[in-house]
Length: 265
Image 1 (cartoon, rainbow, N blue to C red):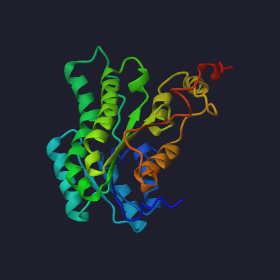
Image 2 (cartoon, helix red, strand yellow):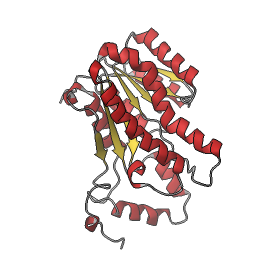
Image 3 (cartoon, one colour):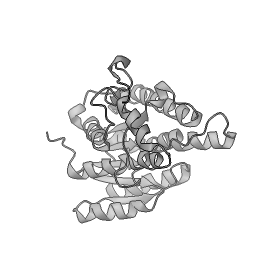
């Protein structure tokens, strides 16, 4: 199916993670569709990704930005608009499960909110005038932690709960401008960060097996590619009457009957 994304300017925050991360996978999938991914992240890894996209014939750029800093975020959007003249969609993809629990300091808790929630507000706020012009749309990458809890991660859970609240609020607030706002909710996805975490555990393989068994559909984690493919469909006009929705790309993790789960052998 042609998603009709060719030439669209798609701003993706949190897009300079390790190769195989959700953000990096999204920009590759966008490139496959002929869209122009614009990378916004603080990690200078993004320069290499933008260069790779340019070698593919795409006029992509990386705007190195502290996504928690309002001045830098505003400047990033201005740089994007100066180059392209428009923004067709925003994908808010920042997410670090930083373990800021009830034992964290006030500063650590607030830092978690700034990174995982406030960055979404900032990018959307500054991109909004241009989304109004293009009748573009917003996609927020969320987490099942907002709905299920996890333990030991109050900051991340609060932030991702806020992301879902903003998704619905923006859907209502921006309907007058024909701007759609949706969220993807991820449960367990085998990203490089997940792999790094497993490697810190003495029994990482057993933990991975237990996690896989907890996922009803095919007893496996969701791949970043599956998340990226869903993201592209939602931001495309093939999904033109979908707004205010939480789309679960999780193999049934959140909603399906627990009786589907088998014990680890």
